[in-house]
Length: 517
Ligand code: UD1
Ligand code: CA
Image (tube, rainbow, N blue to C red; front, top):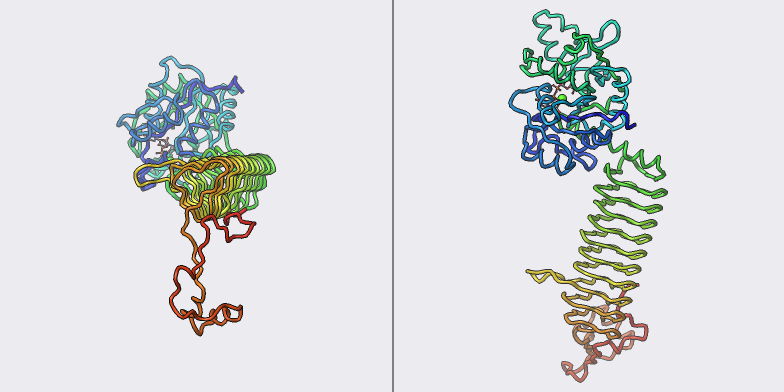
């Protein structure tokens, strides 16, 4: 492979993309988790060129920083006000060494499905045949809009005729009108001999229907000079398909996704419903993992082996361990440990780290929460800015009150500690290892090892209240049938109300303060 490393790749990304009707430059629109130009750069970088240059102009202030962020080694070339693909390449050459020799590839920033393999095959075909120019072409049923490839009798490429020039020729009876019947189109992706490219571009003018400096004119000039110009036909037409509007953006996004899904299926991942499964380009998935319908695996998400993801789950840059189960969940920038279980209906916000065999259950929201190995947050909880140590159990409806309206504060729940249901932990607060919090407590001060904290109001039971206040109701009848005492003659005093001990002594010995297992 290395013998066919190109000297340079030039990616053209200076065009406006008006048909997108967008405030965002066309090449920055994403599919499959990468910008269009990001895909082009990724494919180009895979050929290990000595130089990679991206030509920019439209919305340079947005495109250039994005290019540099994507690939810090990429060179930015600025196109001036002279228009056309030929001028764009000329500007690209200006940021490369003036004495550059060897193969220069030219691709577009809006052609996202082109692969490294195709660029390598192009380079190999070009160099093995000793061509001056090799152009990737396709045979299309509907070649409308594309430059047409005019072949010589010996099969070499004689020149390329742009659609607009062929149409103009039809008006004036010129010979280029015949090109309208040609179905072989110019993809716009080429391999050039660097010297031929430089010298030919210097001769290209702007005398055409669009008044632009055409890169395609280089092919005719090279051929006229007796150099070899050949086509490299690529059957997979999606590889050279560009995005011009949002319909094409969605179409190419779907095709890219089909390819990503198939790649993982072939690597041993079960994807139950490819049509509703979206897998970004940079995602990785381990063997024997099952992806159920309605799942989106986005960004830098990595899934281990034998995990079960979905249905209806969106993971953005989430790391999931082997054997974990993540059901009906939305998560971002989170870590889910091996054999952990998440969902259904869980919302894991950035900074959530769930340990091995840990649990985040139904209707639980977490943020900046480290939930260690075997710890459980099973139901209806908000855990923000929390450390929940190994083996701890958080009861249903617990709220980690982390925000005082100005600042965020942290809460720690110690090892094997137990927080009863419907408690509020008012941060900053620490519950030590081996401690309890009684159900319904508002915890504002630290709890030491072995203690239980209980901070709810005492319970009062008032004898005869139902008979007195709800006479004639079904409740009163049921109370009487169950042997309740009759109506008390007066309002009960404190003496007739039965107070309960705060720690709940009237509770039975099984007391886990309402925490859920
Ligand atoms: C070009 C080809 C045509 C080919 C088609 C394939 C020429 C003259 N024509 O036509 O034969 O069939 O691509 O899609 O080359 N760009 C710049 N600077 C410019 C002009 C364009 O960077 O001044 C970039 C655009 O951003 C785009 C690419 O070059 O990524 C192609 O430009 P576009 O205007 O779409 O070329 P076409 O007219 O479609
Ligand atoms: Ca185009």
